[in-house]
Length: 260
View (cartoon, rainbow, N blue to C red):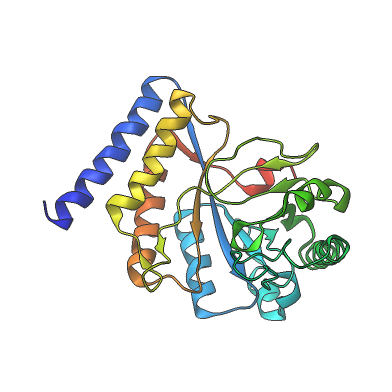
């Protein structure tokens, strides 16, 4: 089977699964998160234009220590965009042989707390009500001890990757993750491919509908505007259009998820 046939089959598979949600009287909620923002760029402009054209709410994970005036200016009139906190400086503090990690590893807990608090204050000051106090750990990793401290630091949410193990990993903290990352990080950050990308999304939808995964966790679409290639951009656009057109699919904004 050629690639075009596989792609067509994948879209049909997604449509059939959403049809099952519809026939069951259910609505499948989705949300869109983009990571690693700190400044304005042509890639950011493209991202914001896509959100406006498709009228899909976008949660932009911003690195506080790298925040530039260009990003603040770019978001001023973007009513569909909310801001999440992407760690503090996106620096790796992992021990030798450990996977990349900012919020843990060799960094002491008091330093983690002080940086996260400073980052939250910075984003709240610059973005006001548009800032949602939900943390997106760099590389989607964080030590358990750091998670437990988040509510005391003023965070009401956390978002990592793949289906959550618990809706509330700490008292007062709601976890809502991303589930589909269409970038193939192991091969030059190219596009994962239509069939495998949609398969990830459909599998999460099936797991939610069947009760194997938490049906109340929206299926999260993750993008990285600074690194994705044209094939990934095209897929993202097609996916947003496809989901907007299906009556059983609905996008939710981050401030609705975390009741900002």
